[in-house]
Image 1 (cartoon, helix red, strand yellow):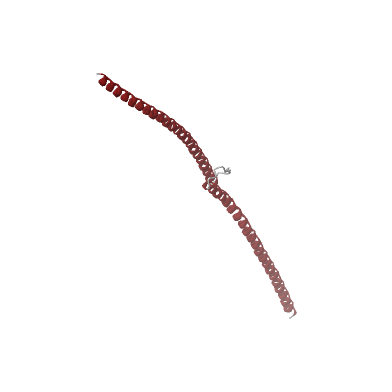
Image 2: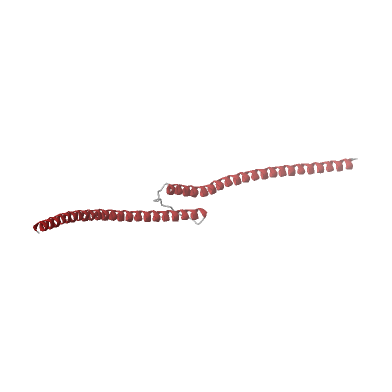
Amino acid sequence: TATQNAFLASAVAFADSQSQQLQQEGAKIIDNGSSAIEMTLIFSALAIAASIVLGFMLTRSIVRPLNEAVEIAGKVAAGDLSSHIEISGKDETAVLMQALQAMNDNLLTIVSDVRAGSDTIAVASNQISSGNIDLSSRTEQQASSLEETASAMEQMTATVKHNAENAREAN
């Protein structure tokens, strides 16, 4: 019948309209899902790039002061105590640099004290050497005087013997 055909046509038209709306909504959902995936990938790439940059900066902030500390320790080991150590911050590497500065200053003080002590010893040894030379000179003078005295005593003894002989002969 015509009413049934009209009703059936309107039901088919309604079903087609609903199907078309569902397909449009599905397409929107797929587009939204694709956009969400793209946004997730973009933010993931940004997060990875930021992690790499932060990792590089963190590594650099740790390695640079440690390399400076190693360089200073190498100079100290080579005997160069004149290096100036700049300390910045309050982290572990700053504490290490402070310890290196204190070690450098203390070693410089010790070396200066040892140098002053060796200079004092050198002066004292020069004075002792000079005293020994003076003592040697006086000892030689006394030995010479003793030889002269001994010679004079021999002459006196010879004179006394000679006088004694002359006195015996005169008797």
